[in-house]
Length: 167
Image 1: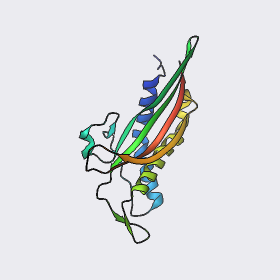
Image 2: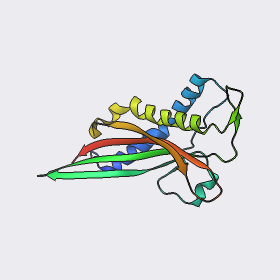
Image 3: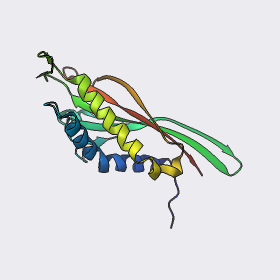
Image 4: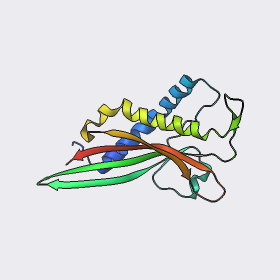
């Protein structure tokens, strides 16, 4: 039996790819930068599409979902354009390190830039696997605060992945 490509298959395929490839890409980026500031791997069990206070003890984690679903049907064919967000969320509370300039900072911007780059490159390096969801595009979104509860300092950065399926 062949697989029918639908919204669920799109979501699951993107997330599975990221689970399979993200930590490899993180290792490559850490080696390339070769500094004292490494970003941390994300465990496969730390992927969430629903957020609750239970994730407050997890850092970093992936948070994902849909930004938009746009469908139109002509005759027997439906074209659906899907945009997902894939975010890396991490606890930034009381995290400081010495940077190359002899000052101290939280490293927030560096973390966000490196995680976002890793996510983007995983999708770009594997775009041919998604020929059925063509054209596939990736855009980065502006880093932002992520509030789960009062008193914590979570940050988020990531990408939007857009693809179009026909069925």
